[in-house]
Image (tube, rainbow, N blue to C red; front, side, top):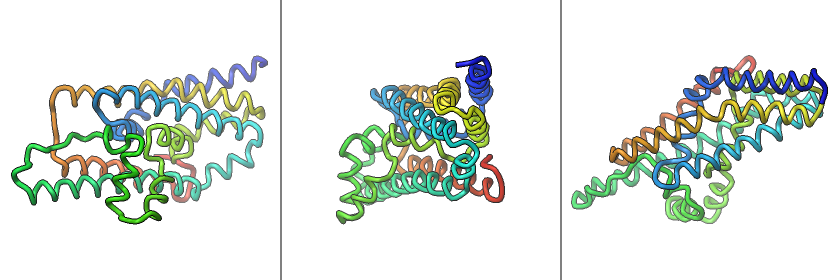
Amino acid sequence: MNEVQLAAVLTAAVAGVASLPHCFVMCGPLAAVGCGAGPTALRRGATYVVGRLVGYAAVGALLGQYGGQLLHRVANAHVNVVAASLVVAVCLYHAASRLREAWRQRAAPANDDKLVSLTLAKSVAPGAAANDSGRWFGSDFAKFITALLPRTPLGLGLVTAILPCSALFGAWVLAAASAHPTVGALSMFAFAVASSPALLLAVFGRTAVSRLGVRMPAVVAAAGWLAVALLLVGRLWLTQGGAPCH
């Protein structure tokens, strides 16, 4: 690696540090809700970060290899729409599940003690979400479709590499300008590492609130899922007619 390539990687790392507040506000809610609370939240947060690092490095390698031509395709609004729509679908699915739970609580006042916190510890545990989706949608086809969605922390981390994001677009440009797959991957990896503390802070904050014993009714949990979905929809709306940004 020559001095110019090393400078590109360091620049990406600095850009990641500069993006910490941005990432906390824009992707922090997704990370917090996606990783949930409870004793496994921090481990799930680490899994989310690993998925994010892998996704960023993979996209960086492709951009470094194919340069501007691929950058144009990755930054294309249709790619962003597909990626963000998958995450929005997950949010709406869990919001519907929480609303169903709220309806059950209302129908059975004796079970008012079954309030749930805003958490994915159960809903995205291996096999749990698939079983719940089968009960909710009631068809094997629906279970197959929901299995394709990025419902796990690892899947959510991977898909963030192509979500609409102005800070991420800058990292894409650096990777494409490197004209080398290894340097492109390292640039994106450095950006992801430098910006990850903001997302881990969001997960830690969510876990800390849960440990304080703050519990929410299912309807509030549903509102949290809907808020994240609306945030992503807003990001998509802002990307129309120009470079990805928010």
